[in-house]
Length: 147
Image (cartoon, rainbow, N blue to C red; front, side):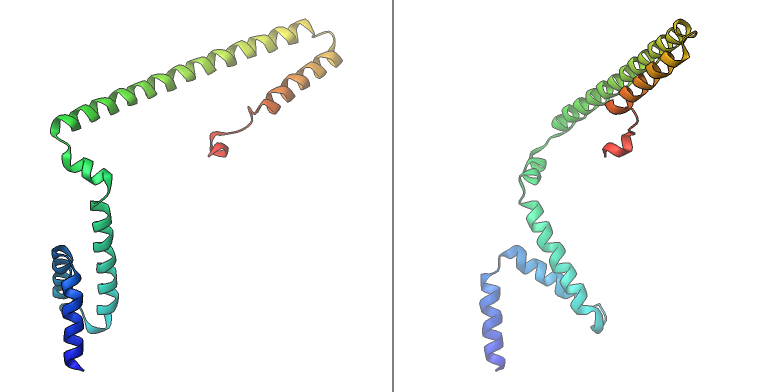
């Protein structure tokens, strides 16, 4: 029975690559230092993390990262900096635009109230219509609702 187990072990180890044999040696070395009752769980976690590392190292992103030079990194960082500056500029311009629109809307409401001040029933209907139109357009939504 013992010789059958050793033959099975030899067959399994013959099928493994050098990296897998190294990983098994590392796992076994660490397992020896772990208490007996925790060995199974630690071995399972280490095996999973090593397999994940093997999958990640074979990914196209990792292959690309291995070929990157400092010049590539500098170019990438410059591109990221330009993108962040553009995003900041766009956000600032959007805030300015929104501020102008709100100001114009407030001026419109004041002029409307001034012109229809003597006709409160018409003013009420017009204001309800304007508020309802903006509510229907979605101005009452917050950014958190979109996410």
